[in-house]
Length: 388
Image (cartoon, rainbow, N blue to C red):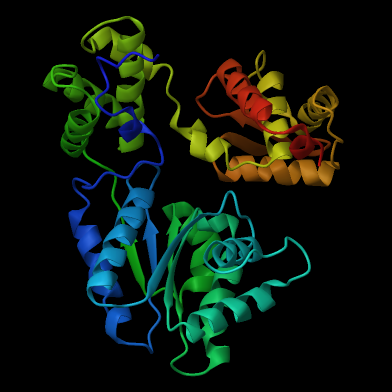
């Protein structure tokens, strides 16, 4: 029999997948999204394609998901047939994988092999057209999909004739990734870019007080504690960082049988929270990407940097430990690129007398903590997932 928490009124409100009913200081962006997508309710000849860009923790995903709920509610009132699908591209790395998931969820299960991306686009458009439905597809961390594939999806409507545009998109990206990977391919397709600025300390204070109110019992968190966490999170403007600190401090208070969160608990929690290794990011990694990340963590426990060759040797040892067949150095470098793209590691090319050498470093998270988290995730995977 589990005892009721004296700290958490609703612990799930601190989970990454939770989207609150209100997003303080993002009301204007939500209003803009609804205004831009309103034509879907009445005009069958239009496709709306928007980009939401901003740094980590500024509410890009939450804004898109809450907008999705609001859009579906409005569609029901207007008897409009609209589907809203959110896709995290770290989990589905190709357009084919994205379309396969959309079709499998809404119509029929699609086999992993045997059907091309073009065939999936045709099937999706035909199904939407037959049922007179519109699809709004959110592509989060879109750079992992690439601008060319997204462009192909958006332009697919041209092949079905005027008035057959059934697919609209919301592309989510960090500003630097938008410029480097997406903008050149999508500039003619995405005409509206909504940029979410970093939160100010005052805005973070409002957000943290709101999240404390819905997640903790009264009296657990004081205004001073929210102010303290807001000051910490204001260094990056990352609301998720502040929410994570508050959550971990709550866990510390609960474990200590305390009735409230103290400043010392915040200090301890601050040193346990690393936004770049959030569960949603790590869980999106494939088995060999996790094995590569584990190799980086183990190699860098005693060193500040390490050359790729040394990390690759550690990767082969780890593969043997987990019963996996090591991939080629080319594949290994691709795994490192993915880890660098999602900003868990850094790779730097150094010019030496004998040529160029790529050096691997970690971001702020300690190697020992990273090793612990990756091993835990690998334990959750089935052996066949790791060996494949």
